[in-house]
Image (cartoon, rainbow, N blue to C red; front, side, top):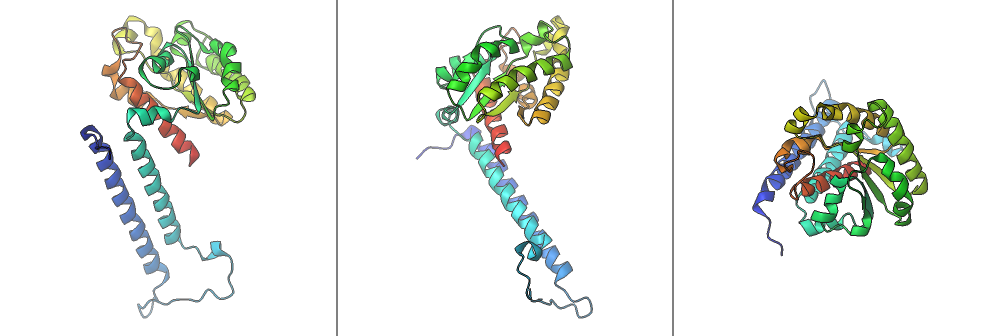
Length: 269
């Protein structure tokens, strides 16, 4: 039996609290529905009506039942999210055995600091979105279920595409070509991780990251690709950047991997 790590207890407690709150909300919804639709207004007594010849199950579904079903789904979703946060490092990286990770030096860190199979990490130091042309065929040959893409920091510095909209158009072209080569794979586009505040001060070009991410997000919505929003983990774990303000320490990759899996989970529900 595995011993639960103390540092994981806050996640588990949060999940338990969420389950309790959702369950109580479902019970209240059921009670309210019964009070509103099952009580005779004159006598105050509950009246149970026969369904008669009604055979359509949907017609017999009450708002309370619908709320309970939605609450049950939310309970399951929260449990699955908690399970991801409680995965050991080994279990976490095993979840990427049927995936491919494509990107720049930041993605190269998955090769250095995780147990994701090296063959499934198609990354290159200094790469931009143009790098996809050279690895798309290799990615498709691996027949992945999921493809996670993470470029952008070098692209912004080199002003590839000239501005956020131009860059998103170029990214759409490159990712679209990959998607055609691997039509069975789900596409996940990571938001561009920002530079550290100190690096932004030294090189203001990196302050464009939010605008580029907005354009990428809109692109993903239009093409029905999944957008992995990394802004939260970048802010919460800013201490896990190395001194150059661009690259990441080993500890950051667990949070990044979790965030990609959580986005994957949300996309499947």
